Image (tube, rainbow, N blue to C red; front, side, top):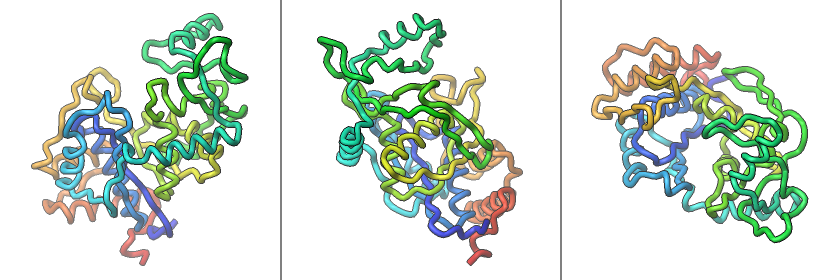
Length: 303
């Protein structure tokens, strides 16, 4: 594979729930390096469709931190909060094709159904939707959410780092939500619509999101849009062994000292970081190391 893969478009898509921490920086650096090693474009998308979880000022903080680290995007950032018309059009398309339907079920009802079926319900775990409203709303019930009618059969994902993975979305997840009961757009719908609209060809992100990928492939097929190439990199863990987050001790990185931050992220990704003291030279050398590890020719050599 050449480093100048024609048409490569990658992206970093943080949610403004707080400042960037070590885990989010590692994911940002990985996606930036992959785009640069391919000679492609790197876009930023702010996934601000869940206002109750967002922090005031977080978007500005994220953009400022990325700039200080030298991770510059090739276009202006896109904000999901401005793209509701696109999501509405996608849902309308799915409804017209008979692939989306209204659902009246509450989370408690779905959990109770899972327990009656003898399945364990983990705290904060994902519930398998039993299809209660698939053939119509129960008598006297009003719609709360919209769900995708998931086809039977396994989805095969070819991950550039994790290898081949298989998931039967119908069995393991069920018909998943496209628009939530509170009226907000579900992450799965928004990310698939935006990846298609922005022409994203390659997604490099944390392995904590690998479990969503099969659903996104199913939804892309339902909408008739292409699915990107995938790479899921290791997540940074907190002291409790879970993914690093505000809840388990994640702190904002010190963007005033970009090189130590970049070096720590590079080590987490499995590389010995460059030792040069100039930020731009560091990023150029890091790109060469990423390209060599993944069998790419550096973009400058590929031109």
